[in-house]
Length: 129
Image (cartoon, rainbow, N blue to C red; front, side, top):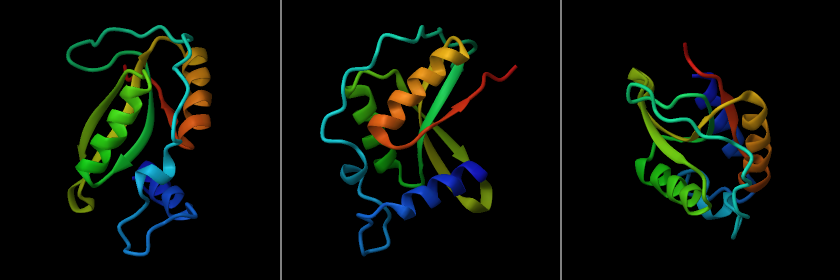
């Protein structure tokens, strides 16, 4: 809930917010061309159908199409991105765009710096035990 609120707050501060109340246009957030993904992170294999290791959540949207667009932009930039659907009951369904499977926290921090530089968003999720 805090994550979704923080994301919404961040997006509401964006200076190019459309007037129709639909949120931020993805083309205004994403740079025209992000550089290639640095070869700094070793990516793990999924365990029991879930990403292993550290994960970076880049965005969270209630609109599935916006989430899929953001996902494709990250994949096109070379990130190992994926989409998670979270049903928050009364708060609705949120589609979280993540980059994941990063082996250690140092590599995750380096990748987070790069993602924030290119996409102005993101935070690290530690592996669940």
